[in-house]
Length: 145
Image 1 (spheres, helix red, strand yellow):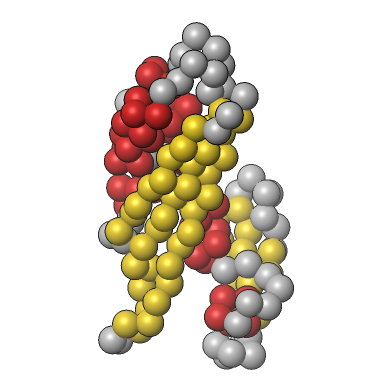
Image 2 (cartoon, rainbow, N blue to C red):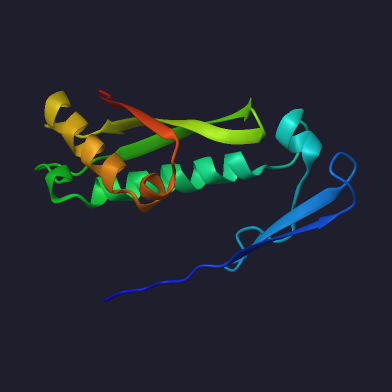
């Protein structure tokens, strides 16, 4: 049975509001990339955990959709794009990621909307990142011409 471990790390210096952090990935895709309070809560330059989770979820879900045998019509798709909107909200006792909304658009010659929506729903349910999140995960899937 296949088992893969991936590693990422975060470092932080200082207090919550005035501190600075960096995020790194084993692959080097992110190498001491900055993040901090202002990037997370005030829209300042830098990344944040929710944005990174959204990117990971969008990537995982898109790969799962493309990998499904039902996604292989007679003509190969020319492009798949997924956007993940991650909602972080303040709740009693702190914050939580309460929702992720996935928007998938694909150009697939010969595909029909109903089959495409079924395929996308299967991928959403089967995506490892969807499985690990407790948030409400919703999906819009549309074929583009």
